[in-house]
Image: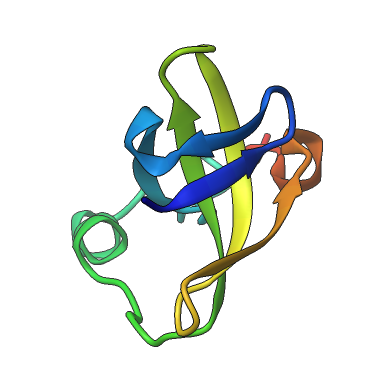
Length: 92
């Protein structure tokens, strides 16, 4: 069984976690608009290359969100990242 080292409650089975994709900045313009073709490209297309990615994960038993830095080639978690580190401001 694959285990994750949860920073709050220790080693937990991966079956307790839900994967929500790569952390990416949405392509929002300064006026808040996004062209339909740009938005569809953002939603449906990914690079898909193996390597180190920051990913959203949700731990169901604790109700907590995590950002993991994970090497998708080796399938190993490198570290958990503070949510504040991946936060971004929307254009004003």
